[in-house]
Every structure is written in structure tokens, then in C-alpha cells.
Image 1: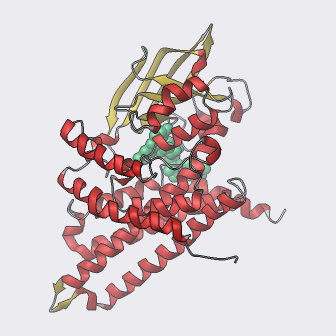
Image 2: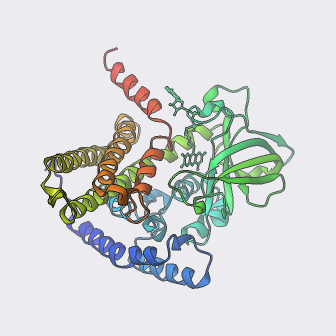
Image 3: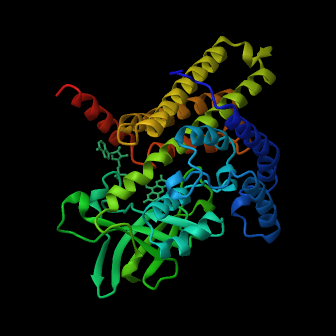
Length: 398
Ligand SMILES: Cc1cc2nc3c(=O)[nH]c(=O)nc-3n(C[C@H](O)[C@H](O)[C@H](O)COP(=O)(O)OP(=O)(O)OC[C@H]3O[C@@H](n4cnc5c(N)ncnc54)[C@H](O)[C@@H]3O)c2cc1C
């Protein structure tokens, strides 16, 4: 039947397992050892590995790859539902081998990597023994408009020589390699000027200048400022065809948006749940906060906003699965605007209901608020997505 909003019962069983596993195993570990997934302590690493092995045994490790790329091919709708659960627990994505930027990088390697690149980089990443980083944004020009890229890669014999300045490269600390977007063809049309190049960590001429502190993110997130000075890598380090850098980057961002958005919806659900529990237990001026009409209004508003956003994201995911990313581009752009906005408002209301406690580190709401704010920039600012939505809408009237 068309317009069926139900989840496939077999997949629902997997979702139920994920929910229970995250609640009973992942969250308690995080409470005792915050950011356990990034710990270098061998004892904590062993605890993390035990949980990751359980995920692997369930066949749920790194399941985001499409069938033609060697993955189980769940499709975006199912992956979205899974990510909704992961979004409730800060370290769950790493426990499931599904954390950014590694997922996007693995997708690119699976789709465009040579056999050698897949063996050297993709296989260890899929096994969970290697981390990576993706670097496009620059302090001077390239950001919202990636065509402003200045980092250059010049061919010199059998090598590319890279020079440039990058920042906000997430996960650069501890990454085994960086996928760098660089201008290889300065005279080509703007969308064909750039290519993607793999730079192994430790290559002479590559320097990690500093981790940039970002609100709501712990130091381990490693959003770094990087410098490339006559950094030489073999010609075979090109990832995908020369001049295809922007096209590949766009393809990389599509599925990730569904995952980010569904995680944000999980986080919003969590904030609403915390809000409901708090207002039922907290008394002020002789009655429970839950009895204040303004509280009921806020809870209702939060519930409406979450449901609206969730339906839009699932529609975008459904379209990606059925008619493809290109046809779904307006919906993908819409969720990028709608979901962070919804999350900001819902978390803001949850913070207010908690009073000062909402701003503390005890409830995770302050961090969720910072996450919502960052989401309005991470994959490009709202304005760029709104421009795209507006242009697609106007095109209907040509
Ligand atoms: C937490 C975090 C992690 C990140 N991780 C990575 C990463 O791993 N790798 C990486 O390469 N980058 C990463 N980024 C960078 C991210 O991709 C950029 O922040 C984003 O593309 C916006 O670019 P910018 O910050 O340079 O903003 P700018 O391009 O300087 O834009 C600034 C502002 O200008 C306005 N603006 C821009 N274009 C338009 C327009 N067309 N119409 C109207 N107004 C406009 C908007 O208000 C925008 O916010 C990360 C960012 C954050 C916050």
C-alpha cells in the first residue's frame, strides 16, 4: 500500500536490539568514562572493543554502505531509523562504526578508490582500526562557497605537490590520513577546478597547527587547522577522477545529511523526554511545573515540531531510496534547514524547564544546544540551503 508509515517488522527487531543495547551498555559506559570511545587507556579501549564486537556480531557494524559498494544496502530510510536511536547517545555512532567524518570518507573510498587505496585505507577503516579526516574548508575563502578554494596541488613528475591552509578539519588528531580538496586545474570551469587527494598523516610538509575549540565539542573531536607546505604525495593518491572533486564532495554529503538529521531528531526526543520527567518531578510555587499551562504548551509545541521534522526527513530518505539523490535535492536541503531549527527550539525549551540545571553538564542539554547551533553550519549554512530551495521552487514557474 502506498503511504505506509510502518517499519518492516524484521528491521524493527534490529532497532529494538539497538535501543536496548545503547540504553543498557553504551550509555552506562559513557557515564562512567565520558568519551570512552576516544580513550587511549588500554583498559577503557578493551571495554569499548567488547561493545563494538557485540555490534559486529549482530551484523550492525558500519552498515551505511550501499550494496554496490560492498555494504548490506539497507537504504536511507532504514539507516535513518537506526540513526534516530544512535542520536540519543553521544558515543553510539562510534560504537556502530558510523561516525562522521569516517562514514563519508569510507563511502568515497568505496565508490571511487582504486584497489590499492581500498586495501590500504578502506579495509582498516571498515575493521574499525583506523580513523580519517576530510579537509575542504579554508580560513580565507573556501567555506559556504567551496569554489573559492585556494589550496593547490601541482603535478611534478610522479607526484602532486600540495600547498595551502585549511581549518575545521574534524578528527585530524589521530587520523591516519586526510582527504584534501585542492585545486588541480586552476584554468578549468569553476566546478571542475578541484580534485580530492589522499595525504597520509606524517607526510613531510603537512602540519597540524592546532585543534580549534568549538562550543559543545570536547577536545577529542579535533577540529584542526592544517598547513600544507610543498607536501609531496604520489600521483596515485588522487581519489576519484581529476577535476571531479566538487561532484564527489556533493555525493558524499547526501546520505550523511539523513544520518545527521535523524540523529538530531533522536536528540530532540531525548530533550523532550528529559523535559517531561523534570517538570513532573519539580515543584515551584506550590505545584508541579507540569501543571503550568505554559509547560503544557511547550511540550505540545515540541511534540508537533519533532513529528513534522521527522516526517520530512523520512520523506527525504524515502525519496533517496526510490527516486535518487538528485530528485530528492529539495527535500535534502529542506531537512538541513528545518531540523537544526527544530532542535534548537526544543532543546531551548528543555533547558528552560530545567532551570540552571539545564545549563549544567549533568543533563547533556547544554551540549545538545551547541550541537543544534553547529548543525546550522556544518554542511553549509542555512542561507545556502534556503537559496537552493527557493531556486528549485521558482524553477517550477519557468
Ligand atoms: C563543528 C564543525 C565541524 C566541521 N567539520 C569540517 C570538516 O571536517 N571538514 C571541512 O572541510 N569543514 C568542516 N567544517 C566547516 C564547514 O563545512 C563550514 O563551516 C561551512 O561550509 C560554512 O563555511 P564557513 O564556516 O567558512 O562560513 P562562510 O563561508 O564564511 O560563511 C559565513 C556566513 O556567510 C553567510 N553566507 C554565506 N553564503 C551565503 C549565501 N549564499 N547567501 C546568504 N548568506 C550567505 C552565512 O550567514 C554564513 O554563515 C566544520 C564546521 C563546524 C562548525
